[in-house]
Image (cartoon, chains in turn cyan, yellow):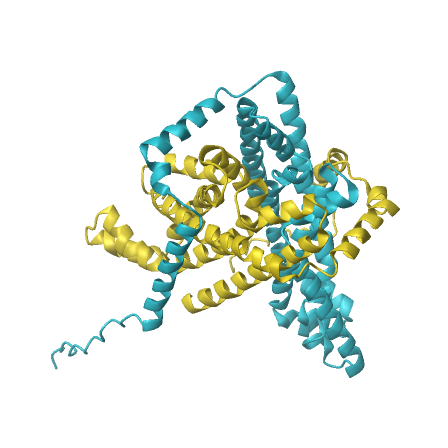
Length: 285
Length: 266
């Protein structure tokens, strides 16, 4: 029998966008118009000849950057402080997150394989602990770094140290949430296998769970470090040291040449940390 | 005679001597920690001193109950809405900057210069951009919009080009085989695959923009951050707690909304 072309089936018409989709775009458009008026935005003025002239005049005032040795020393100290804030802040965050996360992930706190045989009273206590840890992580995470920085400056005084604390607690909230998600998604089979051999919970944790999750923890930590170097660079605006403090001064006193040098220092520092983090990611993961 | 199989490569026994990389890494890690400890002037005794604890206590005692008078809350409606407006319009500007530059930054196109621009835009923190724009256009929410637009434009452009490059290459090859030009391959092969991811990531950045626009007020770029700064300077901790509470609610609300939208999308 000769091969017959299959009769073409009716191609369904492409689905028409649902009413809700159109409604969504309408709401978005209205919100943008509302925002445009609310923020007194005037893109025409910025991109118009006058706005552009003003911008170029400002940019021209920034040049040449101030490369006097006194300022370069200041920029170097500021960069070192900013790096230290980001590094120690991230490290502190990992410490806090690692302590909290074992209470904040359901499968390690009260649910699932590890707690099948648990007595109800103990399980209820563990659920409470879990709720507390989750709530604490949420609080740490939703209060922005800069607000934490204000509070810690108020507590321990000016300088880079409150910046470390602020980055530490906020990032702990972020990392804790991410770590908990990783922990809750571990492959349960190694855990079952270990339980089958009679391993205790701590042994299951050490040999069944940690090997699965540590690479993810490391990857998220490196990612947050890249974020934190940028945040550490602005901590100084509220008195928490680093390059931000020098930038704040340079701007307030209209020292435009110094400002450009310091902004270049931020650029160099951020680029360096990004490259370092990418290298570590390649080597360690 | 059966062919002899090559012996399996020696697996390093766990717990044996760490590799040279590991030793160098640990050494440098320790040194960096120590140097940072010194450079950041870490001062644990001060943190746990009576004075610091007293300060924390002052904050808590003065902060609770928070300022909830109706006139203060009414007064805050405007800055809170302003923060939302800055974040929305800022993200829109970021999209306008990021999308064309991100497309030009694709590796198969000969416009490497846009990579450098994107890198500059995103490496300078938004607060610094805000300062620059406050100088250039005056105080108010508009410089906040521009700051978020430029800084996030840099981020969006980079991520957009990564999303475009991560699409399934087979439709692209098929299109190329039909003789489609580069731009047609891009438009009919890459865009349809990448679109949901582009929208999803843009929504995620909007969440971040709410947080960012809230703090831009610290340098005079409007929104709720400006109020936090003012209340903090006047040591009015009741107001500060209220403001932080509002900020937390706004951030949580945005997160929930954006999560729902993204779930529907992907």
